[in-house]
Amino acid sequence: MTEKITADLCRQWDAQDLLAPLRSQFQLPDGIIYLDGNSLGVQPKAALQRAQEVVAQEWGTQLIRAWNSADWVHLPQRMGNLIAPWIGAKQEEVVVTDTTSINLYKVLHAALRIAQAEQPQRRKVVSERANFPTDLYIAQSLCQQFDLDLVLIEPEELADSLKEDVAVLLLTHVNYRTGAMHDMEAVTRTAHGVGIVTVWDLCHSAGAVPVDLNAAQADFAIGCTYKYLNGGPGAPAFVWAHPRHVNRFEQPLSGWHGHALPFSFDPQYQPAIGVERYLCGTQPIISMSVLECGLQVFAQAQALGGMAALRKKSLALTDTFMRLVEQECGAYGFGVATPQMHAQRGSQVSLTRTYGSGIDAKDSGAYAIVQALIARGVIGDFRAGGGPGSPHLDILRFGFTPLYTSFGDVWQAVQHLREVMQSQEWKQPRFHQRNAVT
Ligand SMILES: *Cc1c(COP(=O)(O)O)cnc(C)c1O
Image (tube, rainbow, N blue to C red; front, side, top):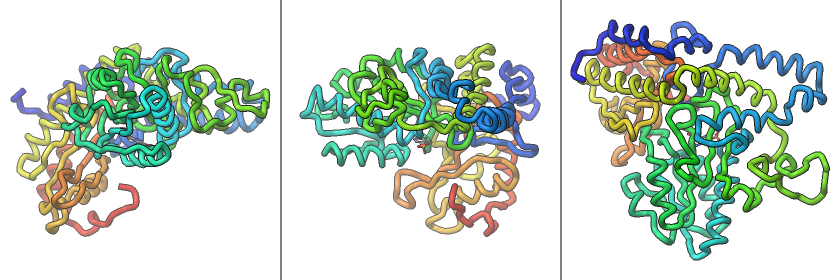
């Protein structure tokens, strides 16, 4: 592990990479090193033609008939079935619909009703303070409705927080800021041991790390498709409920597509049997159709070793990045928020900077460094910490997507980082102006 990493070594690793042929399936812009597939995946080349086909032929010529002739009506199930093997779900257990935020509302509501039916004395919902804010906002809304307390913890407090007064545990499997990953199976087992229902957010896991919902005996899961699954901006999200729960309660957004017989136009709601009841209204057909292109690349990855191969490459990429940052940028004061241990790591690396190491006492420099990298064509992103005094530092986030990221990309990205630091390029005022989306 102490061997120096060179450009040649990275080239050798690329030459030996069995997943390397998949890169040509993606529309990677010239001159760009894309390390943000954890935020918005790269466009699969097939997507453009698929979008044209849906708009020109299916919508353009078949019109309303396309619900049957192009099978639009079963897109949520078909896309769900393509995602299922990557999250340890069986066929017919997953549907694609709505957004992650909306699906979280549905499953958390169902989880709370299950908890209340079985153990109404439990008054707490536990989540992490550093969970993705939308997850916390949805949880806040539901806790208000159900008159429960939302308890936010730090990761190291998790084991102690799983007590008999907790109704539901809501966790994101891989943390969006740090890339730290929970042991889903162990946490679920502990939670179930004290009668807690679990809801897992797989936004940074699906297509990125091994997930086995059935093996973990998880209760509910949701996740998005526009990150590692490369579904396209705003592509609809997925939802899974364990078969033991799926038919127990109606989800709260009882729209007609979740009805047992939507085209009976029955004035009385009656939920579909199975995960279809988690559908609500008419789906975004164009977006959902294009999602299939991202999922088809995964079908090809299945033939090249599947998740085991993806995970092996992902860990090699993140290991290489961490080692190279130490080797090439050791003098520039970066910390690493992402766990060193493979079992605790997702598919990203988050570098930290302490406050005061930027242009003033409040600034860490992280935002400007990311902007300077983007100006050079190395695309990562910035996530703000809590400011001076907070345990949460500013983060420079780099996502590694084994489908299309190469070891050469990692080498070049770190060379750019070194140059940005060495030349103090990042101190230029233009890199300090905050954009609306960071
Ligand atoms: C990306 C992400 C979301 C996004 O939710 P949307 O409803 O698609 O905006 C939610 N939760 C987590 C943990 C995420 O990483």
